[in-house]
Length: 130
Image 1 (cartoon, rainbow, N blue to C red):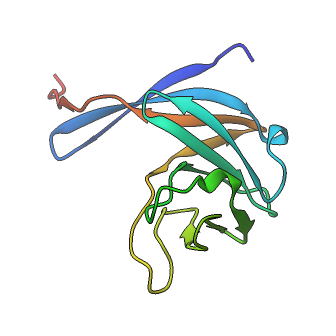
Image 2 (cartoon, rainbow, N blue to C red):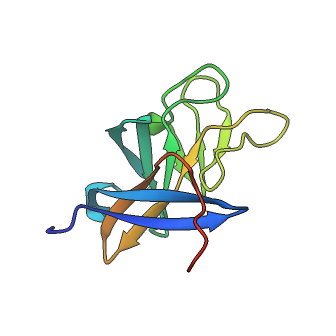
């Protein structure tokens, strides 16, 4: 790949945020119903691929006792923590059922099989257009 990072800027409520997209590999690097980890300035991130080739990214830490979600069982759009069988939604990081808690979810882009993970830069005040 030649382009490994780029930046998007989004603005809301008089605050702009730069989103830095970093290349993290190819979808074929992740087995269907499996995960691979990447280390970022935000910590260890598990990148999941579902049976229908959807890709999600979560902090690799169960909200219950900190188990490694990357070694859990992927089913549908959920992962089951290997320590205590908590089910975590891959799209939101939310614990399912009676369990409460949330793993941090991060945006992922699939650009023709190339995967990019979003890292937020610090918010900046919005500047009025001239």
